[in-house]
Length: 180
Image (tube, rainbow, N blue to C red; front, side, top):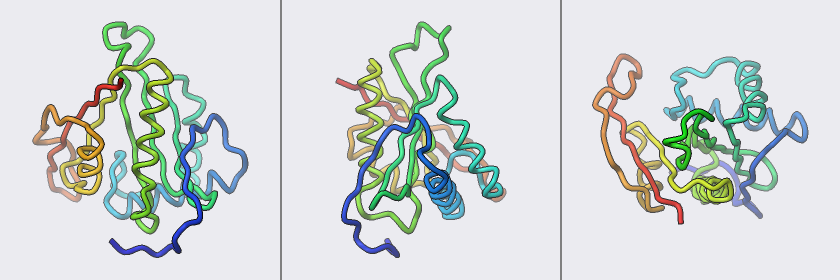
């Protein structure tokens, strides 16, 4: 894994309710774009314009069913994840939350930031009273799969036609973790 950033002095993860300044939104949009270009998921195959990515992330904290967790190295955002809470009318699944759009910019990988973001998301899910954390991932995302399995997620299924990238159909894996 090629690293292009110097070893950070500190890494952290936090829940963002609002962006403190424009530098945070710019850094998050840049990191997300880099992750998409590197083959990361969250639905985009080709990244939209920087303005569109920034607009998307400005809106995430405004959605009541979403929680945005960001990861920082030396106070700069290089990764994120989202918790998607069940809709209010979904009483039968109100105990479970979905982890979505988990990524770290490729040039910031190898320092433990993805794991820290994941752990902060789990902590937040517990704080919110959820008992199960669900996620799905493209089968091609070997690094993410390795992380999720190392962190105790259990694969419960596979979808053979989960995504289409550059004309190729890719399988997806589905995981859950019981939160204690």
